[in-house]
Image (cartoon, rainbow over all chains, first blue to last red; front, top):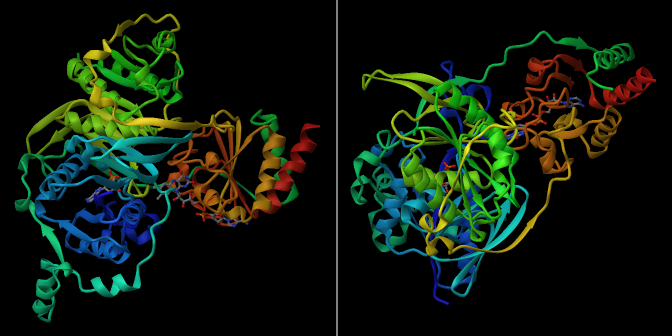
Length: 290
Length: 339
Ligand SMILES: Cc1cc2nc3c(=O)[nH]c(=O)nc-3n(C[C@H](O)[C@H](O)[C@H](O)COP(=O)(O)OP(=O)(O)OC[C@H]3O[C@@H](n4cnc5c(N)ncnc54)[C@H](O)[C@@H]3O)c2cc1C
Ligand SMILES: Nc1ncnc2c1ncn2[C@@H]1O[C@H](COP(=O)(O)O)[C@@H](O)[C@H]1O
């Protein structure tokens, strides 16, 4: 079997699972600065499936593609440490304010620029927006089939077999590449960093990151091309500017409200026998229970 | 033209609960906008689907009936919905935020370049002024949903692209029959005009579906257990209380993650939504994602060691104390008071 070209779509996201009180600013907007930026959890599940294909089919390469600010190169390095072969950071102010349609357009145009691919693997959803739209939308824009909520992907000759997790059971489907797959959180966790790969890619940098280094490592990057993380801007891909960023986003945020609770006049009770007995009596008498 | 449209999920000739809920919501939006409510059902053996759909006040039902269209696969359903939307140009399109709706919705929205908002918890009609572009919009769909891990509530609009698409979870909207004898028009689509052979490249080879065994959605009393319950043993007390009160046990995600309760019973944004007569929150802090699934309960009791737990703010009765002490007393005094 010939090796496959797999592209993993991964996003760096603020860790919304551990939002403390200081994460919300007084005006009700989110203070991203205090939230740690992490590899979107389901994108790690996606990466694991890609690495399993690589284990299964020799000669397979895994490329991580991420769109985001310069610091998103961190998750490309994280992917390299775990077994990915290379990564592309798509970064440009022109992408700012993108909704899922504009994001998927930019990602799809980048994939077209990469050219050859067999399987695109995305996470089911990103924890900052919780939309689960970008995967299917990239698939639509590339005009390839999609299989969502994958738990297990195996290559069987010319075909790809996928076990899907639905809300009320599982379903197994077969499809041919090229194909887009989204992976769900119940799929196996991603393998940890590999010590050798960590040594190998420790100095992997994008060109912009290199410019900010205090020392001159030019020789290192000339000798070891794999240490340069590719960085694309809007000029490196063919795009219609109308479809990018804010102007390419049909959805607009009209209003953001902080979640505030208006306290009700609750009856306060202790755990004493009297209080609980009284409560149960009241509930029975008012026919709430019984 | 420019009607409200609902994509109805069907399986085995039955329309999904979430679709009925959306039809009810769609009907009230259509009334407000003074337009018609249309629906589409795609599947196999749909002869009886009209009688399940029209009573919700559907004016036009489109059906695409073909053995190849069931079970759901993405591409043929996308092709049909996209072409139908191009022909009928709805202003609003609603789908369930189910594994089907969240697979189909984004694909359709990408094909039509129309905005889609996932997992809305509320849909309201309202106006909008774009000061920069000096444009005023009337009758937009406000798509309201928690965002950013539930820490904020966002109102999303799609001023310029149509249809305005939204997905909504099961249980969020209430279903209500408009008129059992409501008369709508049935339009049977000629499937061959809507799909091509290439749409059938993904093949389902195996399916294991299980109907849910628990019915917490319909239970009059729900005992919700959270991380504060502390152990599987204490969780058993909740089952005992549920049995005595004729209710069901639900759980927060933290309790499900701890392994004390099945995922099927998870209540909240990523679980089920319940509206019982009584919700007893046991050791639940009441994060917004949990509240999203229970705050419309008629009465809420909170049992929590922390007098300032956020859940207490929406509770009718606040018992400050340990679940392990309070729950056995509830069982005991309920029995005494009903004798
Ligand atoms: C995208 C997203 C989706 C989510 N979806 C959901 C969802 O659908 N449903 C959901 O529930 N959560 C969901 N969550 C998680 C949610 O944010 C909370 O983490 C979760 O609800 C907390 O569960 P809890 O209240 O049981 O636990 P905790 O927050 O740990 O609260 C435990 C409570 O128990 C009290 N307590 C401790 N000991 C005792 C005792 N002995 N007796 C009485 N009280 C005691 C404590 O004071 C505390 O208030 C989601 C999160 C994210 C980011
Ligand atoms: N900016 C991005 N760069 C790369 N991949 C992304 C980006 N945004 C979303 N994705 C992919 O699309 C999936 C779904 O994202 P979302 O639609 O935002 O929930 C994520 O799990 C990623 O795999």
